[in-house]
Image 1: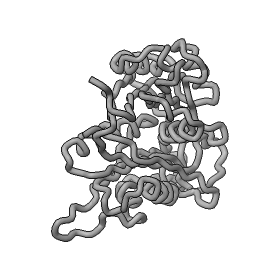
Image 2: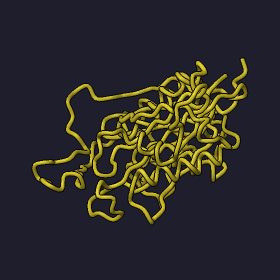
Image 3: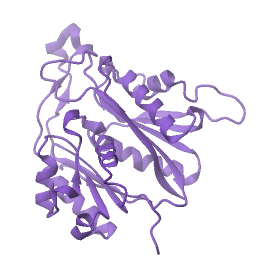
Image 4: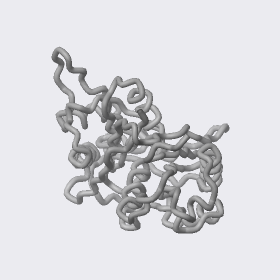
Length: 298
């Protein structure tokens, strides 16, 4: 059986600046939409980069798992939920999908819950200079004989040393290191994004005509509002073929793939699509993954 997306959800509630709380809320909503009980989820992967208090240990995934009350008890016949953080910038979610597939394919877990999102480490919602949307998004993966599953993950990463785009300057922050973060704009990710999308299209056997006809949809990240349109031009696609994040959301960084998926879903763009390309691009890196909602004919 192939991997399928059971449900997705987001949380940008204005009453909390905590990533852990936002992720827990998104997870609960996602479980309801998927009609899955928390104790049925065998894996929880957090891919959010900027988190409450710049926590490194314990894993933020474990804190979210505890807040949800998911798979915490050990008893005969029950395997507790395996939770961990997987950090790969804005591409973390796509890497998490590939990891989760390995466990789903063998039947080691029945459902995998993936989480992404950002929040200023101070947990304040409005901090000058912080470019990312405060909130979280969740996606639940399962298996189905009717699904076509995901293709191979295509990536492009710089071969030379690069300067960090998100870091904590402990010397400058001093006693405020737990509530401080530095963020700088990276390089334009358009070129690597084009490269990975073309590779993904070739492997999936997709042509520009498939996107024009609505048989395929490209979900783009949100490093800037014009990125989806610029990407469409570079790939020779119509603007309608590329769906980005809803404008009011801003830049959710690691959660952008899920936000774009939900935006496309709400707009009916996924109804006839036989291939959905998830793209994540940041600085000089890019990752692209094809999802086939329906089983492909042989």
